[in-house]
Image (cartoon, rainbow, N blue to C red):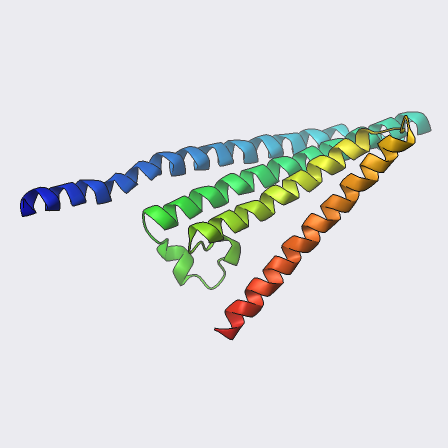
Length: 182
C-alpha cells in the first residue's frame, strides 16, 4: 500500500507539468500579438510620411484615423503583456521559480509572481488598462451624441473608469502599506 501511495503521489505531483502547455501556448500567442502590434505600428508610421502634404480636411481625417490606430496598437501591446505575465506567472506558480528573475537586480516587480492572488491582481490591472484603452478607442469614434441620455451614459462610463482606476490605486496603496508593516 505504501508503494502505491508513493507512486500515486509522484504521478499526482508531476501532473503539474501539464501547465507547461499553457505556458508555451501563452508565450507563443504573446509573441504573435507583439509582432502584430509592431507591424501595425510600422504600417502607421510609414503611412504618415505624407501627412504634412495633406489638405486641412484630409489631415483631420488622417489624424483621427492615426489616433485610432495608435490606441489599437497600445491595446495590442497590453494584450501581449497580459499573455506574457500570465505565462511567467503560471510557470513560477506551478513549475519552478525563474532563477534569472530572482537573481536579477533589474527584473521588474510586475514579473515576479508569488501567489495566485498576486497573478490575478497583476492581470486585473493590465486588463483594466486594456478596458480603459478600449473605452478611449470607442470614445474617439463618437462624433456626436444623438440624445442627452447618450451623453449621460458616456459621462457615466468616464466616471466608472475613473472610479475603477482610483480603487485599483487605493488597493495597491493599502497592500503596499500592509506589506511594509510586516
